[in-house]
Length: 217
Ligand code: AMP
Image (cartoon, rainbow, N blue to C red; front, top):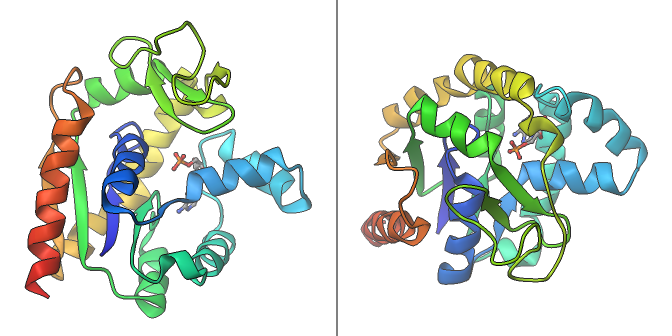
């Protein structure tokens, strides 16, 4: 099962991918998490990445493709994976085609008002990366992760002016991938109009699509 989750920032890619990982037993590969880990580790590369990520700009293709290629070579990816946040540009999709074959691309369709609501209320666990929402997916204890007890925080790039830039970048650079994958016949649409819907319901729908598509091949 080689799956790509496509959709604007705030579509729920990370939330769904972490649940898909648990239910399907395949790794969740988030290039955004990889970028944030590198920044946290304060490496030379991390310092370069921070300049892009904090402003909501895309990291150059070459850097992110190399990070992703190395990750996909790890043994846990042999039985499949869920890609979250990659590819984000046509050159990245072309590079991915050279690395591996993709079984299905799930295109998450979410109205703009839901996206802005999600991003401006998103909280993330500093320790395990679990995602919460102040309005719709509250932690049991204020600012504490239900799963690991870590501290919750607001991502640097979830500030209103950066959210606007990330949505602009998505439309310009990532949206063309919808046509790219639709033409190949691997794109499947999932509509998430209700911000209060239990994520497991959307995950059920995604799993049934993945099963249908991978059983065909
Ligand atoms: P995300 O958590 O997926 O929203 O990613 C956070 C930030 O990491 C993005 O705003 C970019 O700066 C960077 N990033 C993550 N994935 C990619 C990618 N595939 N291409 C370029 N930049 C990326």
